[in-house]
Image 1 (cartoon, helix red, strand yellow):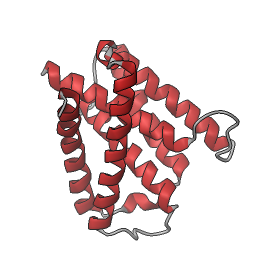
Image 2 (tube, rainbow, N blue to C red):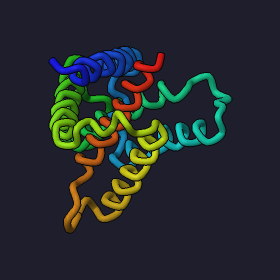
Image 3 (cartoon, rainbow, N blue to C red):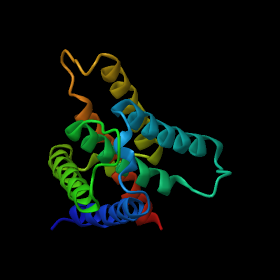
Image 4 (cartoon, helix red, strand yellow):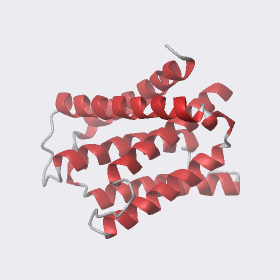
Length: 180
């Protein structure tokens, strides 16, 4: 297993643990979120990261790391919502929610590993701020696709953008783990 493969798994374990605990606390209350609302939640997290990076200080006791974890988890929630559609109530058991979470996080890992092969792990030479900017760009692309009712002419769909947001957040988390 490659170094990046192991690092992804370590970060995934952290994100999955938070997701699992929140599922136990709140159930799948997020099932009522429409995809646009999920995208906006990710926007809030990414925008806060950019604000902290720009200002150099956070006044709320949650830093960049927790926001990157939230981006991973909301990205997976977005993918689940795209698959299942929106519900009017919490209609997802803990076990089913975790199984879907694992499915999409594994797909994100497979995509990341394929791109790592082709791009020679260029992300390792990038700055943390670039991950933030790329996540924000993917959010704006996703919002435009949502405004176009999911129709694209040449571009990938909403799901591809969620996968990319997840992976950029994972890159940031890996870098943070390396520097701690």
